[in-house]
Image (cartoon, rainbow, N blue to C red):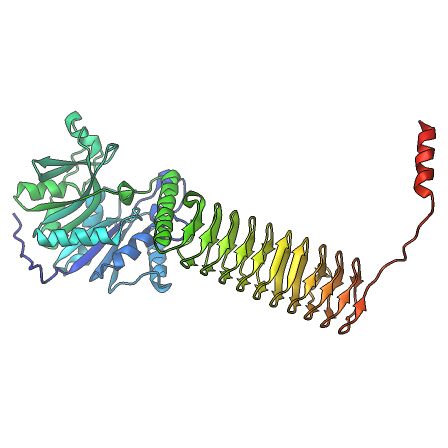
Length: 482
């Protein structure tokens, strides 16, 4: 029997965290180790490490195996990028995949000088909450437990290990493949998250046997050992089944992505964002959406997008790395990338705002308008069927339907400069480089190849010809042929 040193509730036990990330992930149908499979924003192990680091452990030990060097480099990259940090990051290598007990055993050299609580996590469980881990550690300390674990009561225990109790006391965990029919009927399952006293962990791991259906060294067997010695075993029962969702297949990765999104959207709605159809909206963790914004169905907010209060996004929009300021109205069917939208703008429906576009206050971009590296000042309008590329448009200027800036000659891009209070007639082509000065007017159907002076009228138009009776004669000839 291992004798533990009792911890006073007022003096928390030092904490070390072991993250198991040695799996190959064959069912993911990928050459990458499973821990490096990605959700929408992070690798699975990054999710776990971000959560783990919030517990402020004395050290984190990552156990790698398949493509271990690659996993270690990716983990270090997360620290370098500032995704998470810890006091001491260490690695251990599981030479062969001989089970979870063997994986933790490989971490013992990195724990040899550690005295306290060892928290053991799986590198493929990205949904575990910081609050749950803190509660487990608090329970472990309050109960002065040797081993503490997280369990879940479910109507579909499937292939999870079963928590076996004698009354209320946990006595063992039995893997599904080794369960008797009676044990398989138990609906309390193991979440594979443990808090273990460091003095108990090493000798318990060294006594593990592989006398089971999979011929592996099960970490779960340390629970039976602790029970047999009369040690205290504590169990935290969770009620959110999604929280212990592991990832073994692409489908399960999709379920994790959906759960992460549901959490994010719920948090935003609780903060005051109006989301009309949460099931169809995608919002990256890196986005900022202010209370008072309204998001319609089928909207994707990606990258470092910011949506300010009072913005309305009607729906079916993809917005990437774009800042939309207050009171702007984004109508249905809009795509925006690397752009800025000022206060009180109206964009769409069916508009494409491409990288480098900057819309000032109260700019109107209408249906089937495309902008690229276009700067439109306050009050400028392009309401229909227009392409504005590599250009600037002054305040209160109006760009007529069908206008294009001809910015590319097949070799280089050139700039069009349109001043303030300019009126561009419909179906005009502005051939860059060209400047249209303040107050000028361009007649409809013009092709402008030279600069236009301030307050002047410019147009290019072939003379209109009319042939009297031409249509009547054509109809009469056609009738005679019949």
